[in-house]
Image (cartoon, rainbow, N blue to C red; front, top):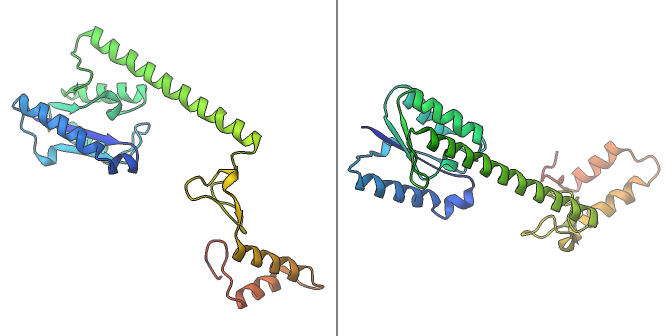
Length: 218
């Protein structure tokens, strides 16, 4: 029986901590205990792809090869590696099964028994509810911080200011950028002169060699 393996991590930080390699090590150890041979081309991986989306290069390739009847079994560590969305989990599992492929999870083994199928769906629904609840709590927490003035509404500070590299939206980390502040002062001083237009002001800054906030001179 030909076996495929699928592994996934959501963020670059997870990739750097070798989470994919940890998944692979578990899967390969299990396959070895079952005397299953898995070649490198039978391993599909998505580094830094969210499980909330279906469009992933590794998953797309796996689905294409399953449709070509290349595999009879897909091995994963847990259902959330396949997808974090309950509906997507169900869709993918049913798609694989329609091609005669068995999906196996190390953390949550299941069979074709209706009880196991229902249990998988219930677990997926509960996990999705928990993720939605956490996201809502984070949203409300950010909103309270914004209203209290401790969380800034931008990712990049306005021209003339600098923010903390580690906490760019922390109001306590905002400070005046002396170089940019001097440019802002020059802009106001020039613009208050009689007859000064925005086009003239822009040309004046260009002549001085002052770059735009994005680092361009044009």
